[in-house]
Every structure is written in C-alpha cells, then in structure tokens.
Image 1 (tube, one colour):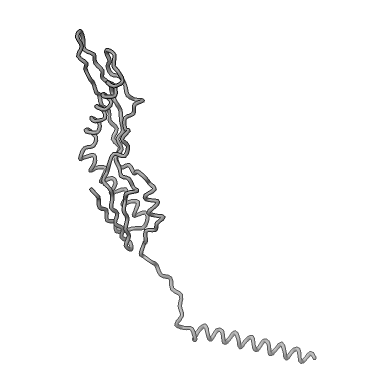
Image 2: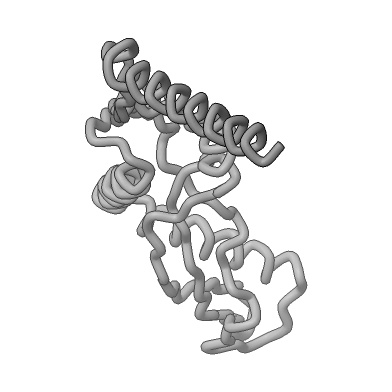
Length: 194
C-alpha cells in the first residue's frame, strides 16, 4: 500500500513537471510574436470640462486704470455766482467676457477666438471716495447727478484710449497663451473678433 502511494506521488510530480515544461515552452516559443508596448498619445483634446473651466472664469481683467477727475460747474446768479467742484475717483477694468471665447483643438494645437476687450463694469466711480472740493450756494440733487455724469464721461474719455485698449489686448494674449500652455498645448493661435 505504501508503494502504491509513493508511485502515485511520483506520477503526480512527473505530471506537474511536464505541465511546467509545456507552459514554459509555450511562453518562450509559441507566443514569440506577442509583446507589450507603451505608447504616448501626443494629441490633446479639449474636453468639455476644460472648455467650461475656461468659460467659468467669467470676466477676466487684463488692465486696471485708476483715475481721478476734478469736475466743476458754475451757476450764474443775479448778485453772485454759485460754484460746485468735486473730485471723483474711479477704477476702470478692461478685459474680456470668457463665456464668449471660442476654442478649437487639433492635436497639440489650439485656436482661440476672443471677443474684443471691453469695459467690464460700468459702475467704476467710487462714490464713497468722492470729495467736495469747493461748494458755494445751494445745489439740488439733479445738479450733482449732472456733475457725476460729466466726471464719468471724462474718465471714459481719458481711460479708454487706443493705447490702453492695445495694452489690455496684449496682456490678454500673453495670459491666455500661458493658461493654454499649462494645459499642454504647444501651438497656440489667437484671433480676435472686432
């Protein structure tokens, strides 16, 4: 009985050895055309999430202009004239609305079409900092409102110059290129809708 068990163990070991040899032969010779390779996909696709994250920036400011204007008015009177002079302070912010940006990607190239640079906020006068410079006589709220509108027009005229708009546009180009490079794009074309 002991001999039978020993023979059975020997047969099982021999069969296991044969199976191991067959598996090794198959791995080495029968499947020699199979191989594992890692490949890099150099193409980058703009995902909807990336486009949404760029558009979610909202309004992107590229130039901030802090200004002050001294504005005055005179009301002629029978005996004397009334004077009102005020100093207005404001910060005009130039930029673009990122929700209007169009992006198209092809491989590692992206084409961005930007809307024109505009004033981002029309309420740029800081009324809390407005100071009365000189005031004589009684002035109604309508006269003060007219002075405010005059200060606003002057700030727009002095701040929305070709030079300032060009600077904001150059800043937009540089900052958007930097953003797109950080996303993996090497070739970037930026065009403007005017």
